[in-house]
Length: 307
Figure 1 (cartoon, rainbow, N blue to C red):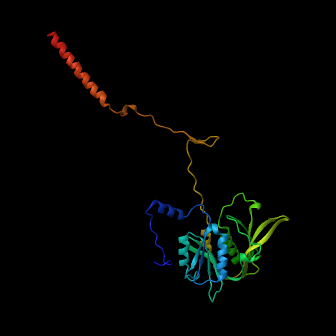
Figure 2 (cartoon, rainbow, N blue to C red):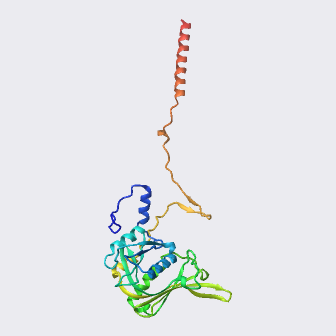
């Protein structure tokens, strides 16, 4: 069976398999979104390097495939959906290179194991992290600050959808609480100068003696928008719908003290002692028989003496 053939779903035969299947089921509160980096039939050095550096940027929540695959996402989405389902990834970044579409990159996401939307970009200019003098290693678990520059993100319908897609791609749905400005070290700047040009640059905050300085660390990429495939309004609303949490049943006769310990009252019905089954003791029963035989023998002796 080839990798592109549709997999058949079977029931779990072990407890471990059951736990794995339960972890893949939809949840009320979803965890971080995983991203799959996958290559097409042919790739160029620039798109491979860009995919690798984006993977290192998202390495906590991303998976990369280093082999080439015969996939054409805009013609047939089933192979890509199969790989995303196997890897448990809801986002994908597909890179390829051909004579008709050189330095091609496709960013998209899935919903209900189907491709929801995606956009095709042409990598026009690229500068890797190695070409920046101030390039430093990005720390683990670094949450980026995403900045969108350009008026088209406010009124152009395609760019508004692109704004939502790129936010999902770089934000990864990671919950953040009590964030401080001092904890923000990574900045992703996304700029749209017109309807067809898009630039994505990575910057980092560096603390120096003379103050805080924002410096570009790469990669820097400039794209030209090619093809798009956006979800229908009804399907997109369904994907964004958040179910209401189930209300917990009220616990009767349960209180919590000042320390937080749980205390409750338990009501037990009165037990009928007349039907109480007790264990019969064999020793007592044998003793009674011996005592009865001794009494009978003594009575017989008394009668014999009287005669």
